[in-house]
Length: 575
Image 1 (cartoon, rainbow, N blue to C red):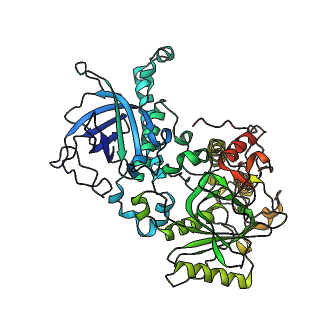
Image 2: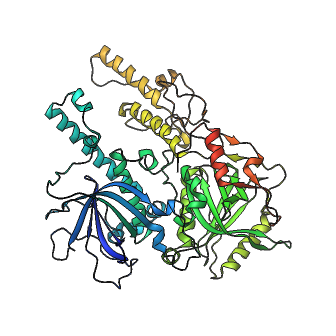
Image 3: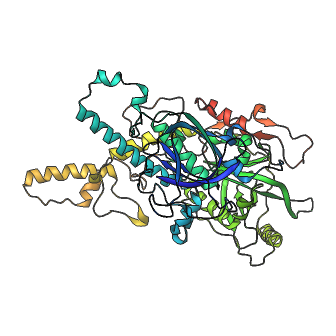
């Protein structure tokens, strides 16, 4: 069961009222209570969201319906920020379509919580603060729980089908409604079923993202819609980093980016310098996006005035002690440097009050470590103790100028091409390769005592261990002794491969998207950063006539996504 509080839109002139909802992910049933009597309660207040069924404090459950469709209102309807009647929760509006069912006295069933409420999770503090920042909506945890639940449901369904001895021909004759995989509850013959559309507004973005994800996953399990990320985990299999999310008030501007792999999407100011060489904000209210191998700095209209490739970044420096923390990408010539100051979202009182520049900067640092800087040392910028953020940036800027000139504009010879954005649907192939590689490995290929040379260099690889195991079996058969040995020098003399410190790791190579995967290949296909580029093309640029001259031609997000899908030969999913 998944419990959450939300406002439900009433009929005619009833308006919105706060209710408690419960979603049964095993039966696809949605329950909601009578309206709450405390009308002065704020929907953003932190309250306990789970009342055990049958307890004296449990609210009376009013209705139950079988969910058949989910519509995210903010993806089909564009809200305008200048609307005086607009509320932050309007962006968290969902339409739940379904058929009513008779509500029994013992419903909803007393089952374990699918995931505890955020207010109950003390584990989000302290040592697990970093994972909570990386996956703020806990979708990775939900994926694991739902995957196990779906596996159990499928296994039980198979056992029931085997026990009832249903033939293949009989199974094919079953109606489409009988082929759903969630638990089918008995339907009352006396109760009249009718179509229902429940419009709800979640209290916060976490509840909104979780309800969206859970309901869509369950509907996809019953083949009523497409699962999120095509049923794949909500993180990149190459590095384990959770996917980023487009804020709902920016959905209609950057929704094309949602189909591609990216990890960070934050708002802030891009810093440059004036004609006298002093630091100043070049691009206020910009949006910085980090993909698998690029950093994109975008305007509010979706154009891209500045971008760099991650493989050109030699140093990432950041400061979290200032009143407004910031970070800098220092690159090799001729790529420009990027100095960015995160700032709160443009809209939403709750989102603005919950904003923490320090957490944003630390999250960016953590993601970069795992994405591409695992082997490079990331040092922190000098800690500035003064509270004035402007002086902190100025001091940092002046300090770095003494030892190194900032390049806020690209130098001659800068490659203006974009890297291909990786479609999320392409990761299905990567997952298949990773799983095949994991299944091909066995514990017999791992030495009980790791054999390493100077500097941690591997002496015996997995392939060598297979050869050793075979030779040991031969020696054991000849000597009739359970304990056999072999000198290490003799083993090294039998080696057929060159020593390589990364022999155990999957091979990394540029992907050829026009080539079909070879049957039986043991090589894991990872997308190497910078493996494929979109050549500079005027179709990907838009001139910034009338804008500041510090930026040249600007790319467009939607055109970049379309060109990436076309270059990789992948059909773009319909929005």
